[in-house]
Length: 191
Length: 91
Image (cartoon, rainbow over all chains, first blue to last red; front, side, top):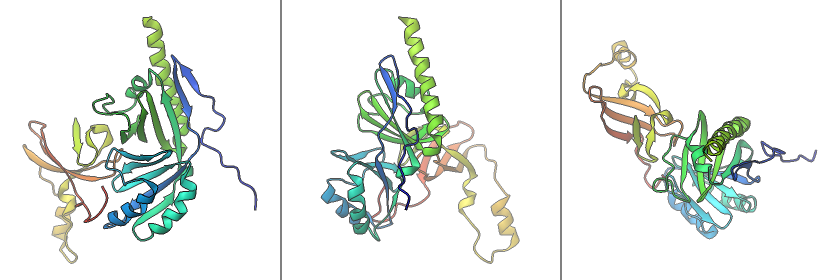
């Protein structure tokens, strides 16, 4: 069988840094969707416990080291992280009958936006209150990036992770880059 | 306009899709006559006051929502999930 090379949606795309704020593609990780069946919450919780994870509440994520379980919709969460490939097959077996488990790794593009202008840049495109009081570090939202479906995570004080459908990767990059350019130009004009 | 999704919290109108009256939730039973189907598909009230709509949170959590609002004052009185939470299910 041919040896296939896994490539991210924006492979080879250089990061963009303006006014100390960087837009970049995140390193590729395994993404596994976990959708508990009705009545499956207990079994799912038991299966996740050995991995130090819990099924997250809406707008939240459960984190254990590099592994994250991110709430991505009604009765749906994504297991994200480098440790997931080894973990997911075992998990799929224990979750059999309690949840639907599917590999979503090649369906998504993951971008990171970090730096002092990250929030202002996102605010141009995202219809959410991104202030600390409403969107603290660790918060997750399934929302829109302009017209695109998006999963937004605040990874750190000035770092955000944007997940969009893989087919939208270049559009998302274009939108975010343009918004960042506008914000940087504005800062430049004021100084 | 903002709707408070029972799962996601207060969100902008852009995240939602409007599907019309919640009459669509009351599907006629099998064997009901043409009049019942005609009413289900075509007959709608046009109230000045409280109305019940069906909305879909398509840019968010994918929940179907029943929105109670006032067409005169534009107040949103309630936003409820159409599906009852599954017993022992996740959120």
